[in-house]
Image (cartoon, rainbow, N blue to C red; front, side, top):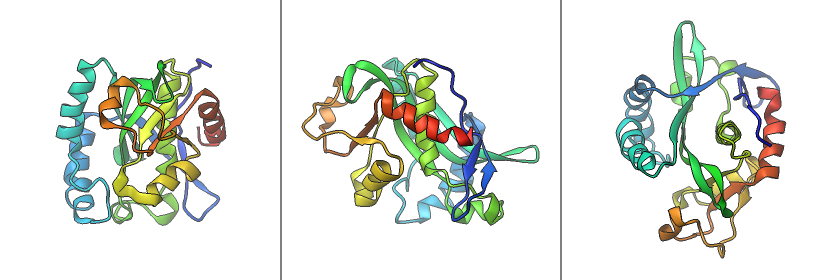
Amino acid sequence: MNVEVKHVSKAPIKNSTNHTDIVVTVANKEVLDYWHKNIQLPFINTMESRLDKGWDWPKTIYRVHGTIAKIRNQLPVCYTIGKRIGDDFLPLGLIFVAERYPALFDEAKSSSFIWYLSTAPRRFTEMFLKDEDIPTLGELCVDVGITSSFNNSNNGVIGLHASPEGGDWLFNFYQERCDITNLSKDIKLPFARRFLGNDGRYFYANEDKAEHISVCNNIYR
């Protein structure tokens, strides 16, 4: 199924049946610098429980890893999810995707690989938004990867790795809340990641699963 799919434009609100407007777009340098200065350093880097503590989106992720991905012709793109506040854009999430990557379950197929994903802490969002305007973004960050895959003729196929530091919570988040499939530990990874070894924490969505997730999220498009 090779069709143009719109990114989500609404997101659910925690403990509510309502939703709030959001914007998904490609993150430029201004967004990444804003994130690092106003979200990463003063908030995320002070939270011991955050897996993304110490990340540097403008330099390490976008510039270094992005350059490596470009050299490998993996089409790296950094997306942001946020809200419009007047004429300003408030970033609330970042998703770094390699849009031409061997599918984890069949390296003859192409996929979008979600390499990095981060959402703004609630302490930050509460500074700018009322409770009824704060979106729940976790599952929709995965949808951004699926949409990117559809729009790059990869039939919605995605892959990602759940960091071991995330323990059972992160594993269950991807398997249960995001409804993507855990790659069996005995399956050999594609050549692009084979040297890392399969630790049993890789996840993917094949064509059928991706279409199902995308259709379920149509209420937010």
